[in-house]
Image (cartoon, rainbow, N blue to C red):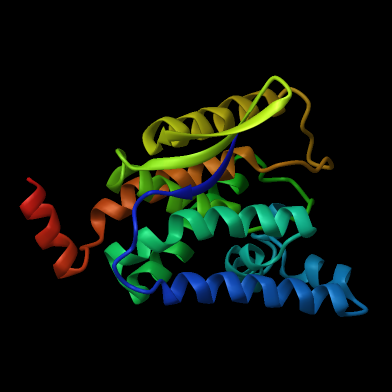
Length: 225
């Protein structure tokens, strides 16, 4: 299943969401075109084993979420951010949305460190922060429909699936994949940071409830209830 778009239209321009997407793309192209891409990734990626070695390493909790390892990594992350981020920004406003995004990314990174404290493998990507956006979307828009591309035998078809179903399904996959990876993961082996995704998702669910939404969104909620 691959999500194409949601059915909830934001009532304001998602300028911060667009800015985050643009920043991720610009950083990717800057590293792609530079002669020392591997050096910059090693320097600004999150390496769990290095966090206690130097205070500067803690900055990688932030810098690592703007790095991506390839085209598919970048496009997949930005696509999910494009689908879910505009509505979450619409609730919070650009400044709170930026704080929310970065906080979820840091929370996801810390969960990854907790499960891999001795790892020396660089970890990069915005997946944890975007997972937080998805968690917030599920809390605020559980009845929204996600237009999803679904393979049926040899054909592809588009189906509208409730956001709560598709997002819970995604979260369960992260948990089961993370548990399964524990059987073969080592401190010297790379892979997908499944628990970081799950941690970011839960952080987003909790944090969206702690941050006050825009007044106009509160008024819409009052009218709804």
